[in-house]
Image 1 (cartoon, rainbow, N blue to C red):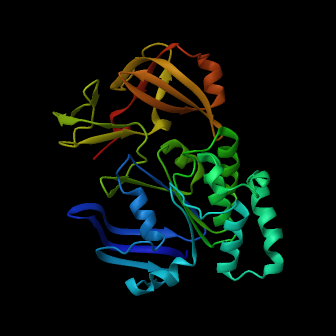
Image 2: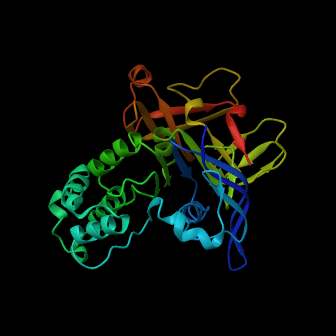
Amino acid sequence: MTHAYQLHNLRFLYGEKIALSLSDLTLDAGKVTALTGPNGCGKSTLLSLLAFMEAPNTGSITFFGDQVRPEQLFTYRKRVGFLPQKPYMLRGTVQDNLKLALKLRGTPKALWQKNINTALERLGIAHLGPQQVSKLSGGELQKSALARVLITDPGILLLDEPFSHMDQNSAQLLEQIIKGYQGTLIFSSHDRLHGLALANDVISLVEGARVKSALINLFHGCCANHIFNTGKINIILTSDIASCRHVSINPHEIVLSRQVLISSIRNQFQGRVMSISEEMGKVRIAVAAGEVFHVLITYEALHDLKLNLGDLVWVNFKSNSVTAF
C-alpha cells in the first residue's frame, strides 16, 4: 500500500495553544478518508497542513515518501486540490476563475472551454458560468469553488466541511463524486455517520489528538465507580475503565426495542423517535432518551419494529460497546 502522507510527532500551535498533536498518522493513497470530530478538534488545521498551506511547529510530514521541508511548501501545494470551508474566489465570473486555474496548471488554452463546461456540468451549475462571483449565494460559491478545484484533476483532493452549505440534491451529487473519485480524497465532516458511510477510513479527533472511536453518539462528562455521568443520564462502563472524560457508542451496536429487554444488557434508556432517515443503504434513527442517540438499523428491522416519528422505544447497548477516553 502506497502512503500519501505520513505524519510523525507533529504539533501545531496557535500562539501557546496546541491545536494539533499527532504522534503518528498515516494516510493511504487512492482511498477516501474522513476526518471527524467536534468543533475546534483540529480538522481544519490538519487539512491546512496536508494542503501545505501551513508548516507544523514541530515534527515531520512525508509526502509520497519525500520528507517535506518548509521551503518546499509551495512546490508540494501545486500537487494538491484544496477546498477550504469558506472558499475564496477572485473578482470576475465563475468562468474567469476556472480559466485562471487551468492557466496556472498549464492546461493548453484550446482545452479551456471544454474543461470548464465539463466541470460545471458535473456539478449541475452550468448556468453559473457567466455569473459574477459577487452575486453567488453561499451554496453556489461552494459548488463553484469545488468546480475550480476539480477542473485541475488533482491527485490529492482535500475538502473541508464540503457539505456545510449544500442542499440535499447538491449533497447527493457530491457524495457520488466522493465515492467515485479516482485518487486520494480526504474530507472533514461534523456528521460522523456521514463520514463513516462514505469513507474507506475514518480518523476521529478530539482536542487536537486522534482517538480510537468513530465519535458517533459522543457524550462528555465525568466517570466514577465505572459509571459515566453525562449530566443527563448514567452510562454503565466495563469494570476496567476507571476514569475518562468522553464516551461514544457504536451506532451498529445499539439495539432498539418496543419493550424493555430482559437480558444482560446493562444500559437501557427509554426515549422517543425524533427522526427516521436513509443513510447509505441503512436506516438512521435518532432517539431522544435523556441524550440523543443515533442508531443504524436495516430496513427489515425498521419494518419489524413498525417505528414512526414520536413513538416510544428503548435504546439498549452493552457496556463493552462503549468507547471511553
